[in-house]
Length: 118
Image (tube, rainbow, N blue to C red; front, top):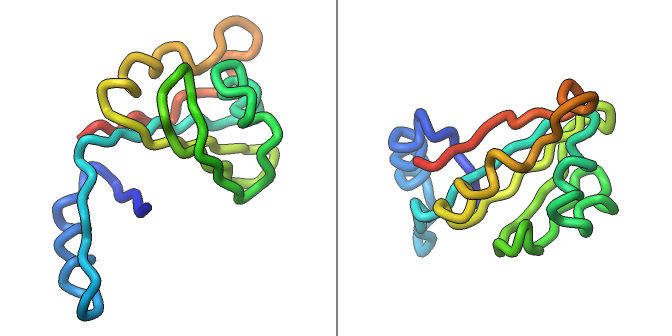
């Protein structure tokens, strides 16, 4: 799976397609969306919706469910600035977007960094 910036996706896809080796093709998944949660409390925020995410190590990925939605979750960035990103079906992501970060005292320790549903 390759995720590109939604703002430049057409140019990115054209560039990728033009440079693929013979016999390899690009299959777009425009029915997918991406939610990105960042900050020191990102793991905890995502873990409330997907307990499996809590045990993820730096630079790891899992196939799991988030609020009952089939998805892939990856963990990246340095541990103090954890980033959790998960692509899933666009309509399902939109339903979970607003509920995936904390409010109150934890609000400044995890934030929704992106929702791409191009």
